[in-house]
Image 1: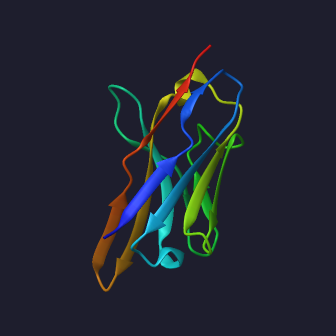
Image 2 (image 1 turned 180 degrees about the vertical axis):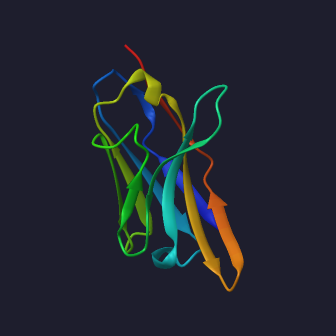
Length: 119
């Protein structure tokens, strides 16, 4: 059974920082592309950042220079360090694991963790 369990969300003031974690089980973590997505109320889910098994990363323009995605394959965990947080970063943040194997798309999601940026 595949599980992605996020943690680290909460309430933070503008300009503050949070570090999200996502612990994966039931998959060969090291071969999966891992990503963070977010969904704000009334909006569609959007990509925040991804990290490939080789370590290359991609970021949404809105978070470049403020957020950093990383992974620890030994711990089956992906992280999202969020600095200089803004109210518009408020959303539920979801962890995603994705890999295409022999033309089959394996795509898994966590339950989400709430991030609220407010004074």
